[in-house]
Length: 112
Length: 116
Image (tube, rainbow over all chains, first blue to last red; front, top):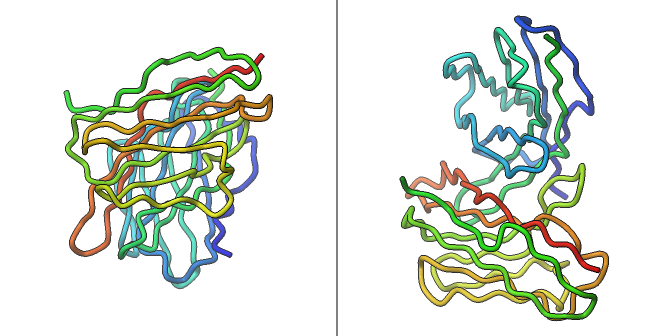
């Protein structure tokens, strides 16, 4: 069964620190990975996607993918209280499968 | 702006009274999804359509049905809601890519269903 596991959290960091969110996956066929941010009571919002090994940076966010270790991470630099949310990791094995397998999410709190 | 719209945002129904939730999109995406999300849980996929090709998840209860009359609209029908169906219902869309990568899914704001 395909699974995506996230560090359970909750994770608490002070404002300005780096928040590190981690995710492992069991399906070696997974090709695409996504990080969603979900504020309480709101819908998930896509913040990063990554398909290749290595790092991908977008502003304060860096996604990292290591397919050999089946590991995906999201770093948030200069964390802000507005980053406080649940972060969902999701993977897809592409092809004709348009489905995402979601992790259970990690609740991040950034303390002012 | 291109977007995914869901109506209503909040729906209250009585036990056993059918409800229909709607989703529309202006992204011109060919894949549409319905998810159920309960508190502190990951979204659970109920169905997805690739164009008009309907795909039902094996564990989606028969109580849930879906229609996609055209590429822009999709409906979720709950025929006899039970207390356990109270949840956030999320519609999402994505666009098929030739290389199979991508598949970013974009979510609507959700419909919060309360069953009394």
